[in-house]
Amino acid sequence: MKRLLAVIIVATLAYSGWWFYAAYNLRSSVADWFATQRAAGAQVDYADLTVRGFPNRTDLTITEPMIIAADGPFGWSAPFLQILALSYNQRHVIVALPDTQTLTTGKGDVAVASDGMLASVIHDNGAVVRSNLESTVLNMTGPDHALAMADVNAALQKIDANPASYRVAISIGSLAATSPQVAQNISPESLASLRAELELSFDHPLTADAFAGALPQVTGMTLTRSEINYGAVTFKVTGNATFDAAGRATGEVTLTAENWRDAISNARENGDLPAVLSEGIIELLSMLSTFSGARDALDVTLGLDRGTVLIGPIPVGKLPPLDWR
Image (tube, rainbow, N blue to C red; front, side):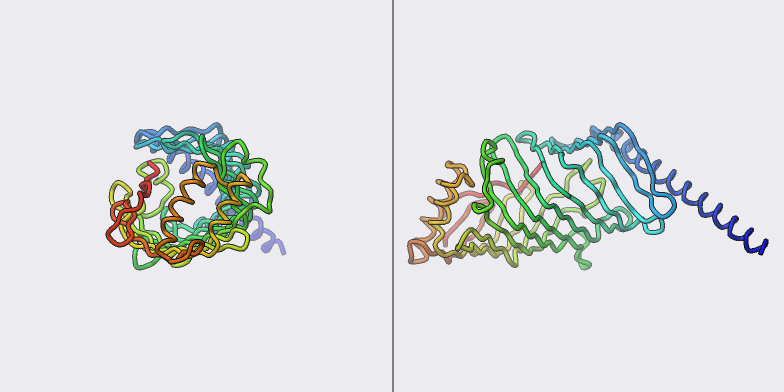
């Protein structure tokens, strides 16, 4: 009995020592990461680093983290960030995010308000292998536009054949694009919903370092399924495109919808779309519907040439570049 008790005590002490060593290494590696990014020119800071969770977990809390990329205006800050993991499996972590965050972009700050936002990340040597995100409520308010979303779910998985390509699935139970002034006053009945499945290729793999250094830029997109439902109307979009260094798209997109005119008008009346944006959408879709042979029906394939939208050889508009730097 004494020998068994001695073995238990030694094992407990050994495991405790190992946990505190692992916690120390985790805290040190995160502090070193911030120091490395700062030395590389990024603006990074935090107020405190703590590791808790003994004996089975290593739960890291970063208080008041702030990151601004070295090569551009992209940045992020929040009251805290928690990275939760089992002590024996550091490759799979849960990321708990606060209800308020701030994104810095070249067009101004974006305020992010959420409820119950969690992310799960599986990584291999820092490179993202698989990730999931969910949030009961997710609102993003910028200087000119706002997005109000609920029941948000997103999943990302690396495609083994290409280390910088990923399958992405997105589901948003309710969605509205509006002006910041009315973002807090949207009725649930006025919201649309979104389902999308796509493949994205980047110029380099997604890693934790990417968001403090050179942001990964999209080089290719295949949209296998995309449906936006608003009332009785469903907009469907499929297609594929490649993107040049300036983020300009080249490829082909197919757009279908029925009774779209009523949906856009209702969205404008409900305040879900800013007047300027809805007028532009109505003007564009009206022109496209003439090629479908019906005033309120759409079934048209659009060409994309370095951001220029084409119907056959005729240019009908421009897409903004996909570049968040």
